[in-house]
Image (cartoon, rainbow, N blue to C red; front, top):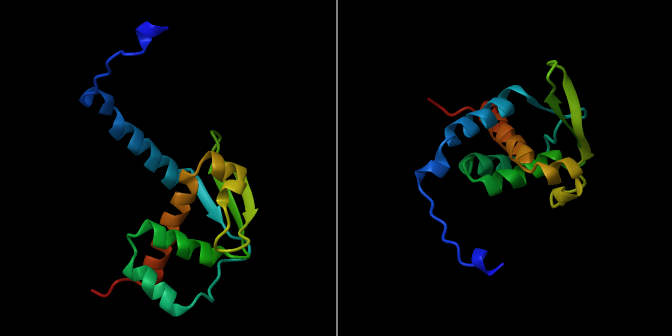
Length: 135
């Protein structure tokens, strides 16, 4: 028992090997296997100033998380994932009760929190399409 107590650990670049492959697998999954559906749409009545603030803070993940929650209050969210046969399967179905809702109460999001961050990223791009930058 004592011989394992003080074993030295050395880390070098070898621990990073394959990271690019892992990152590309995440991007492929995000782009081609995930789908977010809002049967009743999203809230279009959030204040215009909030959308402008979101555009001003488009790279701020915390701010975009808040805007995403505002856009989903009272709305049903379906998260679908493509299976090995190419068909989409609903893996998560929930209603956002308020903008401060604890998403840890949604079992799928508790297990895979990265999926909600992907939804935030999709909302970020939705706003960029809705209000394209002036050339």
